[in-house]
Image (cartoon, rainbow, N blue to C red; front, top):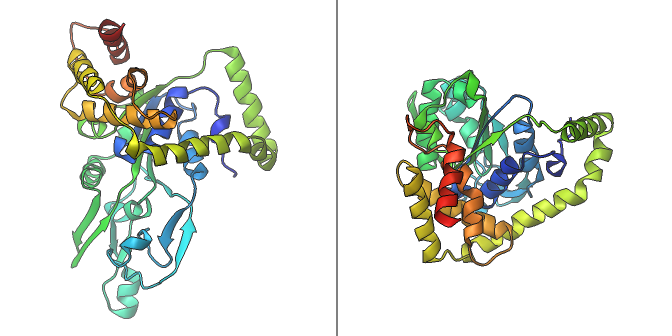
Length: 333
């Protein structure tokens, strides 16, 4: 079935903005989306991945190497040719085995040719793209531990069955889940750069528009995609320009001080909050076509960068988003 255009998704602005920020600067650290079922979480992730321009890879490389990285992965990468392929978006199923995720011995080749060969797993397939885990709060602990190691290092290391393999595995981790179905382990939640909340639309006009667009897409997917092609091209243009600008965008010392003051005020654990907030604000400034990060970008991304990093306060019954908004008001007016 044809993808649903990114621009045609009704509402859910915070989620769409977080995904755009991650596309401009993967160093932000991925996106966790909490919310009700059927609110477009997976639809948005797939739409963004298919919207992005193809990437260049060595033709016969199973690990998605850049042309300049040829010969530095477990594959020989003997081809001198380069081809384009879509940005990968790989689903990690809840019931996946370790072998399927990290890779394992290619048994067919071992039995046929009598030689040990590594069969790449889902982590290799997601390299330079997106790894999507639906209902990530239900993921088994051993897979959570695997993800933690790979997300932290950017590499997948396999030592088993007489194999010793190391390959790059850098991807934007996108998770989604319903908090009512279980908590996400704090160690993994902290690895997500941004955490956003999505809710079922309550405005009648929004729900009617969603029905209209879904029905139009189901009836004639090609015509619906063509209808939104111009808007999607605008989004792609914003991403491409943002990726080119981001290395030249300045972050004033005054803004760094604002960032630190805000994280202290809300009681954010560790220093990852400051770094993520700075990177996300810079990526948003790049998307907005600015040369310098301003307090406006800082305020806009603060809830998604910090809401999952707050210490629990038994004396404060308000939610984390309300605590952040209150701190923003007290600090910056």
